[in-house]
Length: 134
Image 1 (cartoon, rainbow, N blue to C red):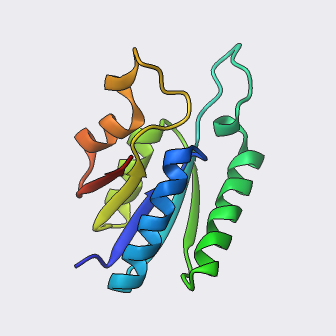
Image 2 (spheres, rainbow, N blue to C red):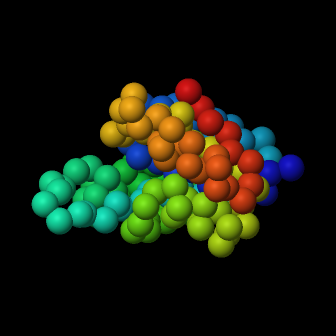
């Protein structure tokens, strides 16, 4: 059913919960697990945060790969720069994944920005089903 699962992560609590679901899906369906983290471009005058620091992203991906390895899963890690929702959907399309699994809320989400959240935009733009983990 699922030959490949894309797991975009941002280090949020919800993203951590989604990792267990991805591991279960990968084991159950013998699916290819792909971990993605997007480095957001730094706008002029903006401070460096966890999600626009290449070093922090590399560490996040390394920890995710270690988690999956502890579950007996060899996860491919991808780091890209761009706007998260668009990049997630581009990678899903490029790799022809069967499912995207992501947390329901990510870092930096505000009540006012819920409609523009990465999760909502990904659902709207995704070329495949999206499983959202609370």
